[in-house]
Structure formats: structure tokens, C-alpha cells
Length: 290
Image (tube, rainbow, N blue to C red):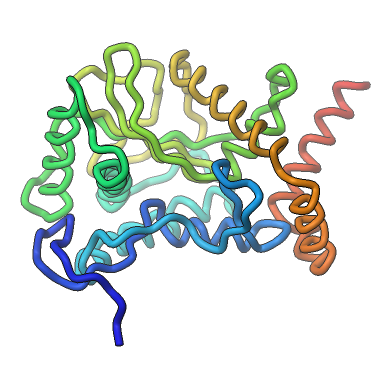
């Protein structure tokens, strides 16, 4: 017997059995597990608890879930995996990438509708953005409306960052997060995936300092981009501090659990991206000491 909840799909509105929809794509969580030293996930909010999946909630019907899944598959196969395994100066893309970016922002707004409904002066703007993005994803509009959607491809940070480099790289390359950002008169929706930052503008005040990151319905995006948005960079530093605090809050017991998990599969740990970060940090530290 199915345990799926019956309700109105948040995308098409039809009453149906609602799938357990991932806010951040399930395939990203699977990739994080497969490329980790232990095969598990952990969150900043609960560092002492091992996780096997990313957050999900009943949102979409089966048909809408499949539609969103097609764009997720496109992103993973055409953009996400090639970043790791191919050397390219540019990436050509089709409208599926824009739809993927819009779906990320739409899912983030759906999440906050449930846990912290928008209030205040930007509530109407968030509602308007949600409506525009919903109609675009349903194929009722040919574009997602005003407000640009950006994709920034991350590189490992080499700057010392006053001792936060390793934590910042862990945050940028080995974690996911979502947020609604309000700064400098702007409102934007953030979805941070490993190696990627997606930002969707809610208002007509454009982001500044995001070069070669804006997505259109099709085009080419360079591997090397530029991000000089000081307010956003300050936000990222704050997230790195939060990550560092969570690491320090991990209990000795859970630290031992991580070590034991890695030792049970030493080959996996050695070839993991988690260990790659360790090697990267060690190489930079050695160069600095020289």
C-alpha cells in the first residue's frame, strides 16, 4: 500500500498522490555520498547525525516530478559531471539548463513557504516570482519573466582566508544549501550545489559583480567566470564560519565514527573527493611553509 500523501501538486495544481520531492536534486546527494570518504552525509544543523539523503517533502505529482527530473538529468550529464571529468573552456547549453535553474529557485521558495512563509515588504515579490517561475516550468510562458538566473562554477579557493580556506572549500565543493538573500536592495534565491552556485533574481534590481554567469534559453557559458559581489562574498564567509562551528561541535564519538567508516573502506576513502580536498589543503600549506 502506498504511503504517499494526497494533495494538490505545488506545480500543476492537480490533486494527486504527492511524491517525496527533493529540494536539492536527489542525484546531487547520491553523488556526494558516492564521492565521500564514508558514504554518508552530514548537515551543519545536526553535525552529530549521519544522513543518507537530502531534505525532501511532499510537493509534486508524479508527472511534474518526472518533468523536473528530465532537466536534472540534463544538468548532471551535460554540465555537472563534465566539470569534474573533462577539461573545457566553455560549455554549450540548451533551455533545459535554464529550466533547471528556475526549478531550483522554485523548489526553494516552496520549501520556505512551508517552514517560514515570507512576510514583510518582499512577500509580494516572492509570491510574484513563484507564480512566474511556475508558469514557465509548466510551459505556459516562453520565459521565466523579469529577473535573471545565474550559474557560477566554483574553483577551489587558494587564499588563506584567515584560516578558513579548508572550511570554505568544504562548503563550496562538498555541501549543498538554499536561502533567500536580501541585500543592497535586492532579493534573490540561492541554491548552492557542490562546485556550483545558482542565484535567481526576484526583483528588478540586478545582481552586480556576476560576470559571464547569466543564463539564457540557450548559449555558451565559460568555465572561468568572475564573482566580485562583495556583499555576497561576505555572506559566503559567514557560511564558512557556520560550517567551521558545526565541525567543532561534532562529538568525539562521531569523529571516531567517521574515522571507522573511512578505515573500513580505505580504497574508497583514498580516492574520494573528501580526501582530494585534504591533499589540496596539504599541498597549499606546504607551499606556504616553503
